[in-house]
Structure formats: structure tokens, C-alpha cells
Image (cartoon, rainbow, N blue to C red; front, side, top):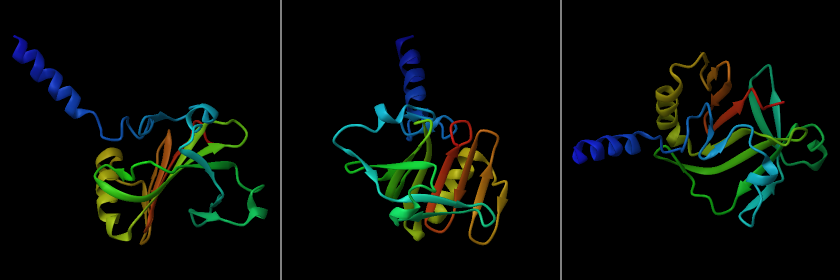
Length: 165
């Protein structure tokens, strides 16, 4: 009987996603909507001086490094200097965590990766979210009721519609 219970527990532990929780719930161990002042404080965390700008028509997110664009963005990006940059079995260059300027809630993740990892990223996202709701030559998009996810040639963006602005 103990062996059966142990086997069941082992199966449960091994079936938990490596990211800590479902993408629909949050990223790694940080739930969407978490209070950014609490989650992104500490010596390892810093504010990243880049300003995300969304181009709606082209569905492209760019990061501006010009201080004059700071007022245009709705998000503050945080970066963990000591974070392991691996996600679901592929290596990341950087991970930025976005918090709403007005509500202070965690709602955005921007992951940068090598172009050579794009096929791995695409495969994993299809496993987790199903087929994209839209795609073109450079993007795959999942525009779902609760989240928006987008892959382009070197980045993966995941946005919580509930907590985003």
C-alpha cells in the first residue's frame, strides 16, 4: 500500500510544470496580479531602464531606451540580476517582469532568447496553449480570454489581460 501511495505522489510531483505554475496563472512562482513592491524588492532585483511600447497595428512590442519615452509606457520593467535564465528546457538571454505603473500589479513578462531557440519556444507554447489564434511569417500569437502571448524571432511576450492596463 505504501508503494502505491509513494508512486502516486511521485507522479504528482513530476507532473508539476517546470515553470512553477501554468502560464495562465503566472510566470515561474509569481502569480499574475502579484503586488510588485513585495515581489520585486530585494538586492537581486533592479528596475530596468527600458520602456515597452506596443504598436497595435503591427502587433510589435519594442523597448525604448530613451528617457523621454518613460512617460508613454504603462509599465515598469524589473530584472533579476541573479536569475537562472532557463525556461521549459531552453536557454534565455534575459527575462523582464512588467508591472503596471498605476496599479502596481505584475502583468507582463518579456523573455529574450537566441533565434536558434525559436522552434523550441514555439513547440513548448503549442503544448501549453494549443495552436496560435493568429500567425504570420514572423509571429505566432495566442489571443486568449485571459492572456495574450506572442512569439517573434527572438522574444516571447506573455501578458495578463486581467491585470494589465
